[in-house]
Image (cartoon, rainbow, N blue to C red; front, side, top):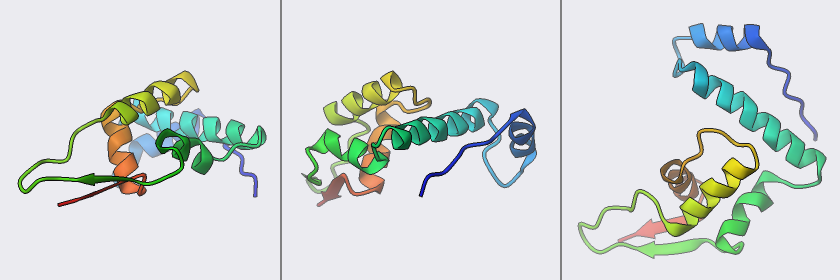
Length: 112
């Protein structure tokens, strides 16, 4: 089902005043921008699902951590993903955020 992003400056101001969310105007505007980018992708016949899975060859990546080893903050894949997202118009999508996203949605599965 297609969706339409119809946020305007008064919506940004309303969200900026909402104490239940992070009130950073640039981040609020980035979320609206990113929704519009996804909307354009859908209009062009591409899904966000297919778009993100291409960065891991459509297969979940397994990362086995040694005892006490921390999850890396970013990887070559998250750097590539962030670069492509930025190229396609997304905002606030750096390699650390992208790696966190990749682990959150199951593109990368880490275990000890």
